[in-house]
Amino acid sequence: METLLKPFPSPLLSIPTPNMYSFKHNSTFPNPTKQKDSRKFHYRNKSSTHFCSFLDLAPTSKPESLDVNISWVDTDLDRAEFDVIIIGTGPAGLRLAEQVSKYGIKVCCVDPSPLSMWPNNYGVWVDEFEKLGLEDCLDHKWPVSCVHISDHKTKYLDRPYGRVSRKKLKLKLLNSCVENRVKFYKAKVLKVKHEEFESSIVCDDGRKISGSLIVDASGYASDFIEYDKPRNHGYQVAHGILAEVDNHPFDLDKMMLMDWRDSHLGNEPYLRVKNTKEPTFLYAMPFDRNLVFLEETSLVSRPMLSYMEVKRRMVARLRHLGIKVRSVLEEEKCVIPMGGPLPRIPQNVMAIGGTSGIVHPSSGYMVARSMALAPVLAEAIVESLGSTRMIRGSQLYHRVWNGLWPSDRRRVRECYCFGMETLLKLDLEGSRRLFDAFFDVDPKYWHGFLSSRLSVKELAVLSLYLFGRASNLARLDIVTKSTVPLVKLLGNLAIESL
Image 1 (cartoon, one colour):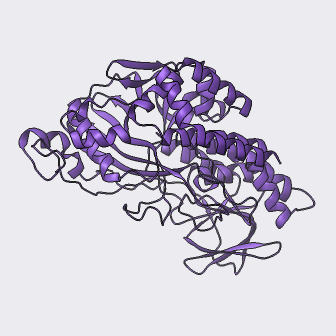
Image 2 (cartoon, rainbow, N blue to C red):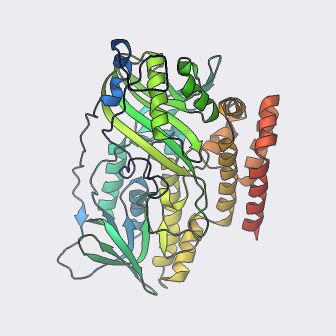
Image 3 (cartoon, one colour):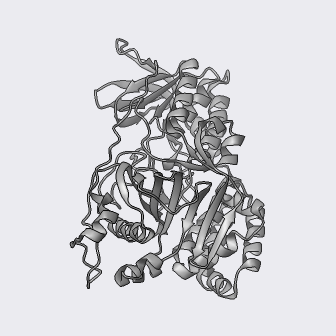
């Protein structure tokens, strides 16, 4: 749904290792066309390669670096000391740097390429960015979103959706950091060391930088954050392209949030059977008649759905829709770990972004959430480091971790994880029935659910509304497939209440 990020190193060794935030590769995949055995994808003919040859097209976009006069750490100094060191300059890291530094806290951001553009496409609900004062960082808006439940049913959602302008958002955050005297250092962090009241990082060039607090904003693959429970995440897997096309069938005033139709697999029995058990949907942002972002997405799976399987389904879907790709401007390969346990709370390294557990366990959304929670974490940091007492060490770690994850927010997350565990058990028909009922409830509740702003009580009300709106088959799904996740949820809520 929201394209991101960097995967964990060990569970995902079967896929290409992408760069942080966006997985942009020029990898290719044999072109499928029609023949007797639809499971074989190494044949071609003129009529079909025109539709699916986008897999052979190398992205034409080139890495872009922003022209911002940021302030660098003085390399002539023998010892560099700061209040806060932030590892990573993605959206979450820069937002936190901006928020903390405006209170006079000395901040250093360390990243191998601080001025590089974020290469991925972020989609958000417009009202989320309006509340954060970031509406000027959207470069395209759609007044309506739509969800194709099936060939015979479509939901139209009266909630505007927007694409984040990566350039505008990063420039906004960088310029604020410059005004607040944030320092930057261009390097990769190799090690983090801790003493009683001070921590330090060691970079790949040998440089050591010290600070009172280190915050990891480097993404999911980080080795700096520790867990005390098995990391039984679900995985959102997606393949996306920003493409120039001859034409496409989408309305320009509507963003396609989900397309659960499977008629494109009518001539692909092998793919159709697998899609019935582990469904994928199309996410599409049409910008004009010849420019569109397309993404085939597995909402959540465990074990992770094969990335090649997602690409095969996308080939079949675009061919069925008659979308002829002229050129691929950008390519994104996304794996987003969802749900699972929170990091150990507290610990010596703080976290924000993907590695902190704030990704939505049921949808994969995170960017708007990071923008909203960074000020909350910043406040907890400032209350400790900005006070005359200068709280440091274990007391500091306890305050900042519990500032980001107070008990009520942990309980809410458990409810969202329950939603993810239920989604994992649904096949295509079950997913269709669930979303048919979900988007029929009072918009206050589905808006709040997708934006992570409902309380436990409100989530309970949503569950009752959902059950009331659901068809008899959907209710049967809820009763039979959510029993085990529900027992687990109640146990976890009881533990959090102690």
